[in-house]
Image (cartoon, rainbow, N blue to C red; front, side, top):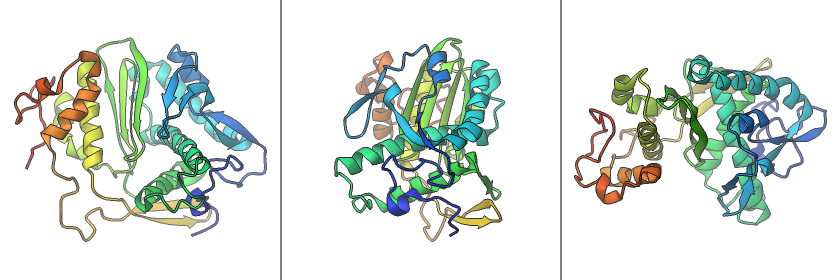
Length: 322
């Protein structure tokens, strides 16, 4: 593979010396780039002192979440992307639903990968992970590495050959003034965000399978504004199905004359089992309980009827159990 593709997982480059996205591709200085951009904190009425707990149980403020970034990359590529997303967010659902999915993928991907970078740096520093990542799952490294290659589309010409590596959903919300919040699940590369009158759900490395998996419900609710409790239920379904997705997508990655061509290998592979493990209402109900915390639904309530967990969708259009 050509040296034009920076692959930080090859030599575990998470030491805050090189640019998190481009390595040492550019010759301009390195600066610290905030994971949560200022415009978003402003829009959310956040001070930046709000806190997030990392996987190593350490707590950091949003303002303290920074990654090393090359000034040329930041100024010429990341900033214009931020401006595009910022303008869309300012317009709420009307603006965000018009965004190119590829731009949303780059933006969410950069956010998720920046978090991964910080987690990697902390793990190496605390010696929970050796400098070459020996005690980290090869599958995860593979997945994170593929995401990193794909979001180099922020500054390189990356061509996805007749496929999208993501499932991204933008939905309208009934409440016009939904407070900003987000969730992420690094292991499955799943993300959700809500703000104003829109919600976003993204699975960044599933080749569109989660969207297909929930197709019945998505067709049923298409274009209808969701209540707050419905949006969280939809998130719970995607976060759970992303966990059930049992393939590690493989890609043929070919650098050709300044561009990177990415082709998806068939997900079926040699396995003849389904792409998703069996949906279990009981496990799903536990996920749902977490998403529904603000409404105080107990697990007993949610799964009072084990064959029909409660749902705020009518009909519930739940996946079948086996």
